[in-house]
Amino acid sequence: MEPASLRVDSLGAPKLDPIVKAEDLWKVYRLGNVDVQALRGVQMEVQAGEFVTIMGPSGCGKSTLLYVVGGLTRASRGRVLLDGNDLAKMDDSGRTLLRRNKVGFVFQRFNLLPTLDARGNIAIAQHIHGNGFDPHRFDLVTRMLGLSERLHHRPAELSGGEQQRVAIARAIINEPKILLADEPTGNLDTKNSESVLKMLTRLNQQLGQTIILITHNPEVAAYAHRVLHMRDGQIVDGIPAD
Amino acid sequence: MMGQLVWRNALHRPLRTMVSVIAVGIEVALVLLVVGLTHGVLHEVGKRIEGIGADIMVQPPSSSVFLAFSGAPMPQSLGNRLAELPSVAAVTPVLLQLSSSSGLDIIYGIDPPSFQAVSQGFVYLQGHGLEKPDDVLVDDLYARAKHLRAGGTLHLFGHDFHVAGVVEHGKGARVFLPLTTLQQITGSPREASLFFVKCTAPGLTNVVMKEIGSLLPGYEVRPLQDYLSLMTPTSVPGLNTFVHSMIALAAAIGFLVIFLLMYMTIIERTREIGVLKSLGASKSYIVRALMGETMVVCAAGIVAGLLISYGGCLVMRDLFPTLTILITPGWILRAAALAIGAGLAGTGYPAWLASRKDPVEALAYE
Image (cartoon, rainbow over all chains, first blue to last red):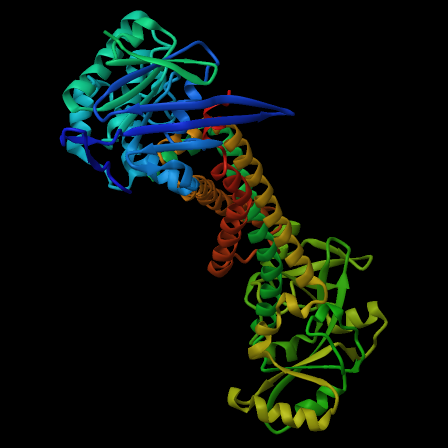
């Protein structure tokens, strides 16, 4: 896997490649006899360490964009570079390897494994990664997310906020290059939403975690450095949150 | 971690897992009991023949090793000619007759003095030997099965016989009548089905067999020390096919149950498979997780199968004391391998399906 390469700007200062770069990205789904264009020529760049939200109405292609960027599905046309790796040129096993090493996902519905406790749900990410259980990293992440006392509880015994924090812990346990969050507060009340968003902000500020978060809620979007607006499969603008 | 995932997944639906374990257990028990029964019966018959203590058995030409298939085509006087051979210590004629009066039993008609000379005699647990024409001897297992005691009555061939004694099992048949009585009943006066021959020394068996071969060319002359090795399913026409058919049926049960279990599992856990893929789990990881779950069910099923088999043996022994079920370590291993093989084969297609699931579709599955 190639790391981001070093370029210089017009003044000769080092300029890093964006950690995510989408060029003329298209994704077309076939539903019966109809082609649905979920992404229509998306252009996007995200720098390392940025916290970016993508905002748009339901059905505008936000989740599809996230899944293409994260290598869960392949683009129909165009290019996606993730930390210098062209996803379009990768087969399924290549994208799987990339996800394992460089991407963390957080979903709206938490998507924890119901048969494992919180500890197991986080540890399985390390197991899949192949480097075995790292107790130091495990303690750091669980303490940071306030989960130390809840590790032996199954998802059914955890609140929504706790489940989402377990999901975040699972997503970042292997120090991914990028964290992709699909409406992480969609199933949470206001208090838990705020708690989760503050944690994501802390991860970004303290650990430099690059985050792309998709939402339809402007209040959620306000936590990010930058907001991209999507409509009908296209990025329509990109304005700083402040 | 994989072990934890596999174990917890297997226990997630305890009733479904338990039903699958029982099904695999039935698969294992079916193999062990069918094979055990066929091998056991044959083995036990062979041991009883060997238990007579004779060195050689002489039968008419083209006779089956399975004595039940014999008639009574030899003149009893042949025994006298056999007894004249130099290295022969004793000869006893035996008349065989199948009885279906109460089950399927082989009845021996014996000449008590010569039978004693060849076999060193019976060990009496009750009563005494054959003294009168309507006396009958039974072994202890037969007596237990038919609730007989010395002094009781046994109805055979349309006649009531007096149970003169109960003897220790292991000497040829389970029921013994006087030779002349059985000859009368079967209309075979002065005839025998076979002769048991005792040599003056065990090392002379081959010499005596050659002499008998010269004396009675064409007759079946078998050394009894190897008799047990002849009592195998391959020696009985069709029995091997039956055993193999039952094994195939058992394997099919295991395959289908596991296939159904795993197919339902991957449908139920579609979203979880999507989650694992989103974490970067490879196809082989998904397959290994499912195969692991199958192994847990199969392992538990093998244990259940052994319990069912041994429990079945105890019940059978109680209900049918004369039946022997022989469960050997070799067949336990084969039955276990069959259960695991059928289970893994049943998991193959569902596991392949699961590994190929589109992660986005899987994550969206309700």
